[in-house]
Every structure is written in C-alpha cells, then in structure tokens.
Image (cartoon, rainbow, N blue to C red; front, side, top):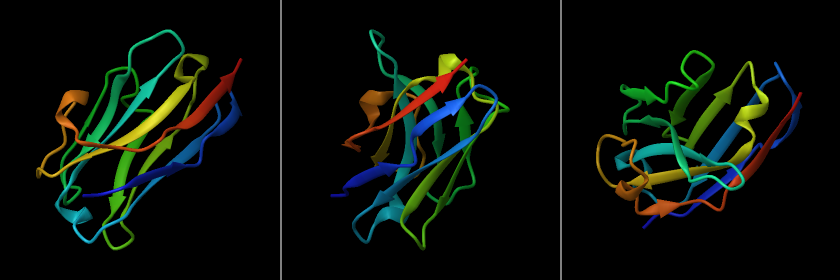
Length: 124
C-alpha cells in the first residue's frame, strides 16, 4: 500500500507557474504508475497527466499539452507536475494517484491510491 500527499498548490496569476509535488510513502513507489487528475467546482474529476514507473513514458490531456510536465524522482518517492502558462480554466483541486502497474492510465478508475488534493487557483 502507498500513501500520497500533495503539496505546492496556491494562488497564481494567469500566465504564471506552479510546481506540484506528490510524496509517496512505502518502499515500492518505483513500481507504481502515477497520474495527476483535477476537479473543478461542479465538474467531474478529469485526467491531466500520467507517467510510467521508470519515467520513460508520459501522456497528457490535450488541454495541458505543451504547458504541463509530469516527472518523477524514484529516489525521493516523489512525482511532480510543473505547470506553466497557467490559465483561469486550470483552477481546480489537483490530485495525484498511483497504481501498482508499470504504466499509468488516463482513467481514474484504474487507480487504487489517491492523495487528499491541493488547491490551484489561477486569477485572470
């Protein structure tokens, strides 16, 4: 089992940047495919990005492609989401998720482990 804790959210102006971190407990983090999802008020949780267990494979939602970068440091048991050129429509609670399979997934139902979320607010 793995526990996930997100950090790094906050308030930023449009065009700005934030880096989210997700720290994982447990010794098997390097075996987990990881993902980032987000949920805006009144909307369903949606896929943002995913990364394979060795970091060699990444997939992004079209809405963030070219602006966000997912990465991981298995030595630190941490996955990151670098968010650049932020837009007001990026405002949401961001969640990291893990699954004990090599590759990540864009489907939230494929993940067994979730963090508590971190709020990102982008002002216009």
